[in-house]
Picture 1 (spheres, rainbow, N blue to C red):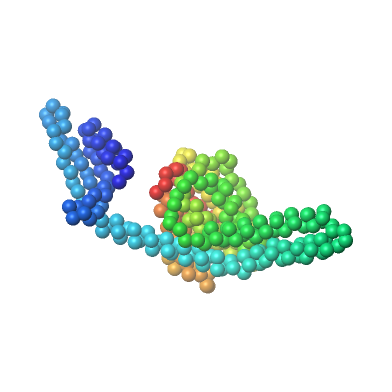
Picture 2: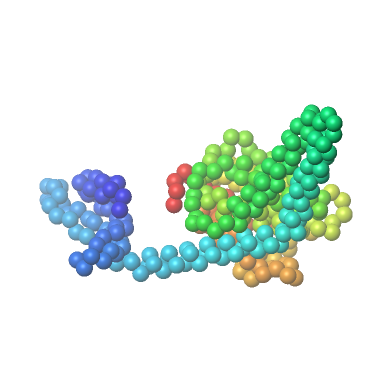
Length: 310
């Protein structure tokens, strides 16, 4: 247990206030267990503390069940990330093939420049710089895929959501490019950082962006996807909106969108938005959707400010 817990407990009790919390204790047998504890100071007629009374409940089983459920939820989120990468595999392979093909071509030209008499060192040097640039580009693509897909324990840390939005768009743009989607940004400057699990919120944003891209497939005219961020709820939270210009959502469908296994797609499992809402709510936030007046749909999420790690 964190020693600070006992410091806070003693401070509260010596000031005549009750204390409640969870403690990790050990039985006489040596077995560790969790208990929920409420301690009350008992006062004399003169207001002096004479005794303490404690109510204790063994919550070990509850903690174990909660831990198993958290693990199951993370497994579902991980499978959803892998499924998203699988659906984007063709576009990702094409995107990765471009720098690799460029590296091969530049290498051929560089070898030719070095084989001439005298060797064209200036051209070879310039080609080497181009090869390095393309290798870094390919490495960045692989890194983004690896970071998004890897399995790891949830961890919340102070995060710049504007930067996170742009990073997710770079990944989503690989698959969206063939749909000729134009991304518009209206991101509030100098937003305070928010304590989130970066990979999980990336997963939510990628899902919302991909939904918007798919909603505009087959449309004629300009296809624009707007992403906005701003302070909300009295500057205690950050609100992000993802808005498309697709066919829109009837109100009756918007109500069911976040229900597990509900899908408007013929080949969809209907778990993406349900998982996304679960992630946002686990962060103490909200996620909802609604139709736009001029057509299309806007998904909005609110995440409370904070810097602590859960």
